[in-house]
Length: 128
Image (cartoon, rainbow, N blue to C red; front, side, top):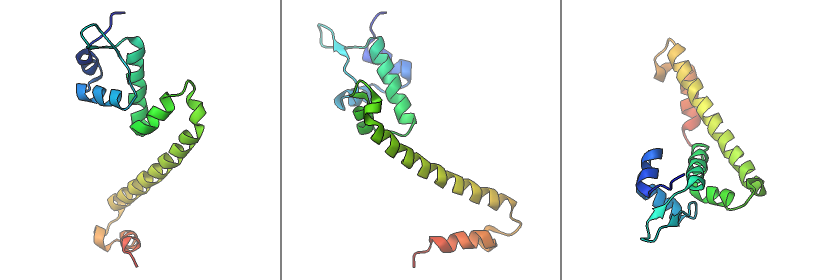
């Protein structure tokens, strides 16, 4: 496989070149350099970009991704993954509560500010 330039990789993944440079500065990527100093990305680099994107889609930050990807076996950092599951579960609960509120608003015959359920939710939000 022929190696790719930073512009080609950015286009292929729909990213800006500065994103790839930032990931490199964070230690997530390490493309080789040609004789002229230009970055050259091979298949392993493309796989690494895909893994970073997958991690970001899972909600992991770049620092955590660097920790996970800096070890031969990501399960060496199972503690980090378990902690992230807790974060995801909290986000899921918040999203479910938001969905429930919107569904209730759609089904309640009363205006939102008069709905007993909405009033209870509003009261919970007001600090003591």
